Image: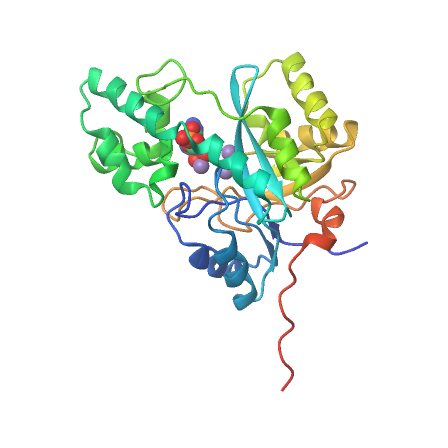
Length: 292
Ligand code: AMP
Ligand code: MN
Ligand code: MN
Ligand code: MN
């Protein structure tokens, strides 16, 4: 059997809602023992060329990556895309459409927060957004922590910005079918991100997996920074039941905020097919060190 690989195929840079640059992430991944890496910014592949170059420069194998926001049964679901051709035109167009409503949503979020006595959050969040086209709830959360409204970003999400709380604005993201198609037609693999984080009933979850598979989705994140051991075991069983390949990624966003460090994850359960096995031809291998 092959030795387990330290693959980290899920993290975020300043191109979406992380706080490190693609170059800083590559170096940090390397320093933490990662050998195969992917940068998976939300709805945006603008960091891919830098990430691939930084990976090659510091000795990491690389897969292109993205995390697409999807609306399924009125909930937001995240679909990770891996190993696609980053120059694919339909993927770029789909992602641009998906990003499109973020500014308007952010203004509505700010208006909602102003109604409960927290003014100025649109402008405040924007100062945290490395990419103004990708203003996200995370940027609002950082601003609310900095201004002392909450002690950390977890408290922000508990009290604000989530369903039923002030600052939450219903949003319609991409369709599941479209997101899977953009990724697969660009030569990549679609993967259901952090499945334990959704609030679906058993039947709804079954519908998600069945439809995802029907549209050509091929993978599921079994080991991620936000899964407990029990949750990973549960989705390992789902991966086998649905004949999906298994992925592994920290979902790292920021040194001060993220609970899981790059690469600091349990190995995938041995009986599963790792996504990188099916994506072997899509991996950008790091140049071998020159012999001296
Ligand atoms: P958005 O795409 O603007 O809806 O923002 C979603 C991002 O907010 C996620 O990718 C996470 O980084 C962050 N997030 C969402 N829910 C939580 C939560 N409960 N606790 C901490 N961060 C969260
Ligand atoms: Mn995020
Ligand atoms: Mn996510
Ligand atoms: Mn993520």
